[in-house]
Image (cartoon, rainbow, N blue to C red; front, side, top):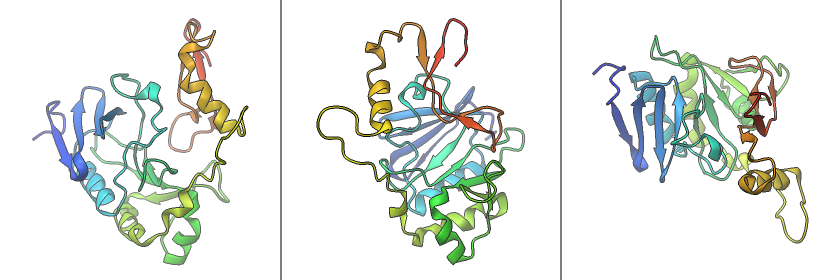
Length: 224
């Protein structure tokens, strides 16, 4: 079957389903879905998803990512496939370098909180170009599958968000404030003019783009 067959669909362990759409790959899990733009079903894609799930990273849609505004049936989606052990912690690995022509991805980025365990296990990586001395861990294409398999023995508690529980009146952290604003966006006085967009928005494009946090875009002028 051609990787360009728009009817192609695959089901993986835990009821996760990916389906070729015209603009990318529809990822479905636990009644939620989003469009992974430009991704296609291919042998490389299937191996990646199957290996990640078998390694314990069965969560492809977390509680806050992609953002609700990027969930299906919205078509803006996201540019990545991502995997995590639980829906309520930080992400473990994300890949946004898929090439539809080659039907393969280029590199994978692992959460920088794994750094000590990567070093202890002797796993090869480089830091992202935008943060060359620390930060998230870039793994070359030929090492992605072995690295995922090695992570089955890792301590994933390092991905805990460690956010203080919000009790009482007011906002205890910036995260709580941002979450409440996004959660109640339709009730704000600026909702009629501004559309919610994802945070960590790439400025330059590409894997190592500089990023800024942005909450909304002016739908009239099309600017952030």
